[in-house]
Picture 1 (cartoon, helix red, strand yellow):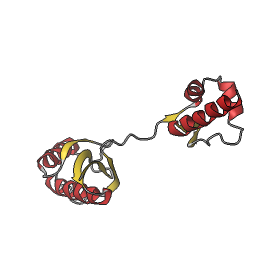
Picture 2 (cartoon, helix red, strand yellow):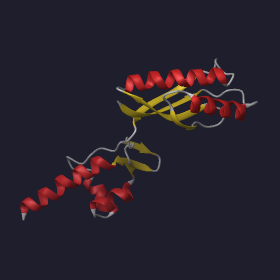
Picture 3 (cartoon, rainbow, N blue to C red):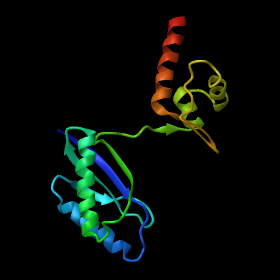
Length: 157
């Protein structure tokens, strides 16, 4: 059995009495068997929580978490609340860290100008996403590129 972190959030609900519903949701989850550490999750007038469960697979973790969350929605007086987001990950999961150009340049030990020259070369990892303020790369992609770059530089010496 493995520990899994489960995130569940509803679509926005009527804001009247919202804080009492959140309190009831979290209280019910904290009493639910197999659920540990429920905390508020979501924004605005949504009902949501992040908590941990033990399960053999991600699918089973979702089943356990969803069952507990739906029972908590009933206790909070919102059995009709529509779930809009469910996510599950191993307890030790760290989401990919995205880096902007300044951080990538610093990690590679080059100037930003040199970084942009490197981005045109074959083998340089493509950005994970492009925002209005610029490209973002996955840290692990840049670290892998740096490792191949340093080994090719050493091989030339």
